[in-house]
Image (cartoon, rainbow, N blue to C red; front, side, top):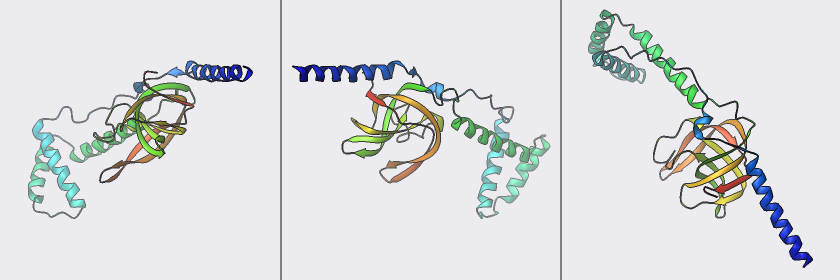
Length: 218
């Protein structure tokens, strides 16, 4: 009887501990992982379709030229460039603005929410396994949608969490919905995600070593 009582007490404490771990955390949604960033101005919004098409042709030509492409269309490109200049456009300035916009968007896609770093959180997501121990995955990516990184382009880096969970969790199929609870960390990394024909690098801004991973709905 004493043994049974101790067993019941041990199980009760374990259940209580699990509830306590979940209850002292802050529920977080995916949109909260991306911080607010200033709006990025579009330097092309006032251009006509003809002007945009001409810029595309010039840019494609210049990119091919950098790779040793031929000069068959050089005369055509010079005509397009002269036309845009006559219309008051700064072609090189627009290309520099394009590069700046790309850099700003890439920075925004990897930016972290400082308010979440070091905070104990609980959030839902889908498991994309990276490493298994037997039937359990012990390292995975937590992603916001089914098929992310596999059937579609990967989400922004700040919309993926790299998770290491030595206890492991069994997964049913490629993507399993779960809740993870633990302290959020900021850690930039690139993880290789396996495909049938090889691997693709996926950039990530967050990491977590949760103390609790449970199936979604529990």
